[in-house]
Image (tube, rainbow over all chains, first blue to last red; front, top):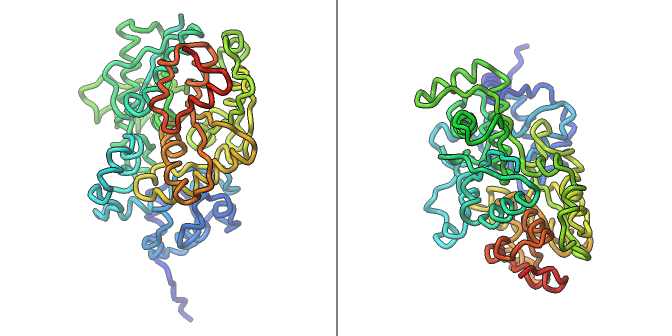
Length: 131
Length: 300
């Protein structure tokens, strides 16, 4: 009987290439999600994000998770399998951004806010969310 | 006087100017002269994490070439350490430095992308100012204190990039103590909170300020619950979120009582008895002067 694969192994491979991280090491313990300060604001938790990458499920790219991530590296220091989830998130963002799909546009930031925000906030935000 | 190359970064020249002035003057008291890198550029604020992206490491590495030049020109003598105050700059410069040091091929490629510069040799060491203080010894710092921060209940806040990832951090990632040791040396009553390394919301402050306000509320609420009167920190982005975003916190939680937020160097300047002008309190969003006045700590 032929087994039908739901995911695309090429997608997992692409994420591995961009992030340098091997998601097959993940044992789905959920340590990443439990310590994540913004997990409650994500549509899928960091643990599930890794699972979808493992399975080659490209729809993970439609999730909000990598855009809500703070790059705070809490999951990175706590992962018992030493997977750098921040790099996985960055890889997912980059797959989007390299297609020119920017997550934010400067024109959306109210002028009053633009005057208040320090350079450090604007530069880091644009580095993460624009191509 | 020990002369050490110093990389300010963009925000230290604008909204965090008070961080810079208080650090430079406090360092002098301790016999350290922070010498600004000539022609420095923005480090890019975040470390680029994809394996194939070399381009974004050019900006941080270019700054390390400036440190080499300072030695070549004799501005400093055989001093290949560079000090940062901003935690984000620290993290980005240190990680990029490690990134090229780990792989000679990468270093070669990055050098070849900067034809106009002399090659980076990989011999610069990136330090946070707190590491210099630790090296001098907190006992030495205690000796310079003229106005101990008696009865001032200070909460150290580390945030993320000073302690994470582990190979870049300057202290234990889950339970750092370096700021506690400093504030104790300054005579303060230190109040430790479980959320001292919890993220402030970082760059999400640009497009998700309500999310940041909630994270900030969680942190500052804990500060109040533990009896803290103010926060001492080291990152201009944490400072913006923890200090300025309290306006947003107040909208979500009207019962919230505002908490003054200091750069750790401002607290040093106060304790060293330096002129109030050096602290630049006018740049702090929540005015910390009433608290200092109450404690008899305002230096004229």
